[in-house]
Length: 456
Image 1 (cartoon, rainbow, N blue to C red):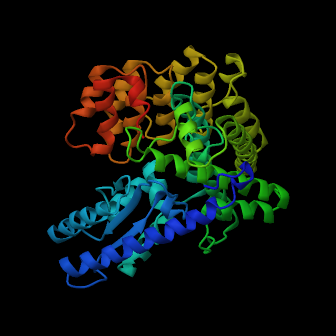
Image 2 (cartoon, rainbow, N blue to C red):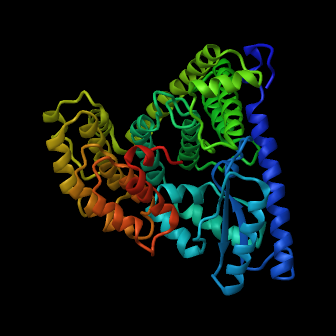
């Protein structure tokens, strides 16, 4: 970071993403081939392939202290492939990543389950980018992505996450300090640009952008090409994204050897430490962050509006009017009750609208109505809510959410302030669940709800 003046901020964040992603790709490919030779005797292993997902999958990896999000896809699981997976992970852990996030699942059957049922893990599969290994496996993954990445799934994904993040961000404030990633206008919001771009491409039957650029950048350029944002707005947004990316990277780097590793809260101590490495004074950095995240918030409002219009064009004007009434907190309960709740998008919007406006009777009615639902966004909307009672949380947390494809929502249940210790114990002590789905429940049991909500 240049210490001369604030004007140096926001110039190279996306370029750094590409540099970091290319370094990541090189590490993963070379390690893969090395361990392939050791375990299989050949570099390009038959029946196995490695993919990036998450930020490296979107070519948006930042520096400082990032996770390594990696998928190992196998045609079938064998003793040899288990050994290969274990040895590879150990190798990748020597490169100083904050965490090597290598899901334990990775067969074709797993992929189809998550693409069909889950938003979070399904999104991880959709973000995958082939790096090395069997090209036949790579094609098999691509075929399944095309099969399941539907208009309906894309709409449900944007709608649920937009409403979910409104609440989730409130839970990620620590002693009044914003989280650079999990706040309105923070880097997590970049996902909506990518998701909207993907929805638009499905609707228009357009292929993906093959350019080696961050997906948030290609999504913005598509909005410019469609006349949704002007060239000047694009430049302002790129500047804001660059700033956010550089700032978060530097905070991750500062926190690498501390108890705050992996966290990016913009608190007073962090601002002072940034000043010592060349940033402007704390108030100037706060002011710039406020300005830049405001630009991202405006962009998100545009994307939200465009998404509703796209859904309305498919479902009709009456549906669009009902949807807008359904999610707005100011809608009175008597009007919200008249909106049908069988359409998954309307159901999701109604649940959030009732929750955000404190309409407990309506929320309880909707929770009861959808008690046997298998729809991920609908269940997720219920168990997120501060109005959700412990009985409903227990019903889902010990039932449907333990089925394959729903595990991420166990983390949501464990963060809810109303969850009972009985439910938390059921999740935390279930040996059949992956560690990632039990760890929040364990923190909630041992350290309380506040600390559970501060976990990455």
